[in-house]
Image (cartoon, rainbow, N blue to C red):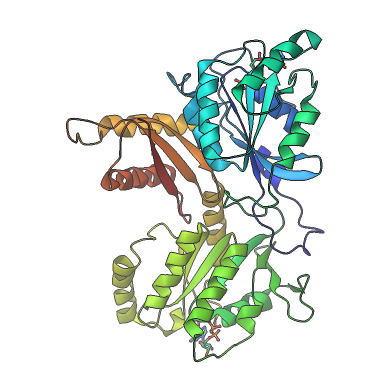
Length: 455
Ligand code: GDP
Ligand code: GDP
């Protein structure tokens, strides 16, 4: 898979860097056929010919890891979107709107040989309102003959147009240099995480639930590499633990091993630790005590994970202490109290005896796979079409809001943006979310569905 090849690395040599923030995001927007995809191909050095002169070319990917002038960033290509869905060719502003929402800076591409159109001007207004920094690219300036056309684009009021031929590479370097200069060090919009290296796991749970016992058991069963993270001289912050033949990075284990017994503010300290570990983690294992009733603190921790957008596995620890009666109540409790996460994989384990600890790895794999997953735009829209046809939104005040188009804006976790002709009621949004899960699974990951209303 292209994604995996681009994003993963072998994990060597990158153990010393601490948590980085999300990479900055650069979006390329513009009308269809101005050359956005040609430009994107040039930036990411994509070899395969995805740009075709055939209308209706479908592309499902929207973001790519990219590097220019020594800067790493995420590139969002809106080129494929309008071509995927029938009747959407004119919805350039909508696309730009999504892209801008996801981006720290924008490359706005105009076809210099055509000049600024009314649609271009509409996009300009949107870009102005968004207050995102913009580089204006006057494309298809294949030679000196088109330079004058480019100059005319000053009239758009976005500053100096960069004359470029995305096709031949002319001028693209200068335009991209300008674009990456506009990017912040760390994205202000993305919730993305550093990629590559071993998967990052946070072991969470209230005091005495068995975190350090589990850590010891996991580490004891197979090889452990304790790796001191840069900046800490003595305490290792994370631990590399081999499970199921692979290395996993258990983040912030120092906080688990260093048993701080604070009386005052212990709760606050614990929730800070949870937050900090989640910042660095991709997936959380929340330990619950199966021998005791679920507490408010347990529920708060689960909620924090869901809100952080990380993948989630529930581990019911101390299973050796449960009897049949307790197990019976446990199921009721889960149904009643953990209603927000019926999608989380669950393992019943004992950190003391080691029971079923081997089930942790498949559960982590499932959750991470869902967390990383991307639903192709075409498939999402045909699914939406079917669902909406069978269960249209109720008519309110003589009007019936329609869903025009949907796209998965990002992964980790999957985030969807739906464009609708009117406000969608909360109940209907929940219905759509439920159907999305029924159709696509997403076991182990929170998903997010947001709705944009077109006037
Ligand atoms: P998008 O819809 O904005 O992504 O546009 P594409 O990248 O698919 O390009 C649309 C058409 O314009 C394709 O036939 C490209 O080969 C062509 N094109 C793109 N950039 C240039 C350029 O710099 N010069 C010329 N002459 N044609 C270009
Ligand atoms: P932490 O505060 O979450 O790190 O919890 P600990 O690992 O220190 O465990 C708290 C207590 O629970 C200790 O006395 C452990 O021996 C005990 N404990 C942990 N896991 C299990 C288990 O699976 N079964 C039983 N019976 N006791 C456990």
